[in-house]
Image 1: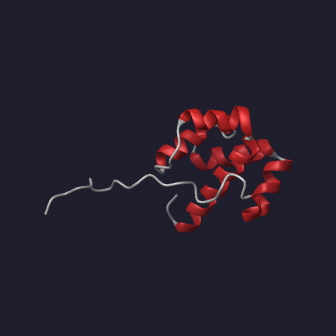
Image 2: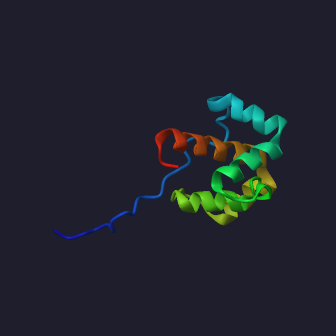
Length: 105
């Protein structure tokens, strides 16, 4: 039998919630709205990074790479700098929390 996939490799996936699915976790949404920088620090802490990195596109890129999530650095940059950084930050936190619940973070 021929091996068609490398062991330990998995197909790219999407984030577990959409960019605008704030109602999936109202607590995170409110946290991001009322204390955006605190939410960023929480994400950075989860990722083992400096608190100042939590609200940047680079932390999203690192996370996507770690969990093989579809996207690009350019898309991350555009989300954080031209579109809706609070939405992107909340989406990232929701995904981290879901992965913690699933035991895969």
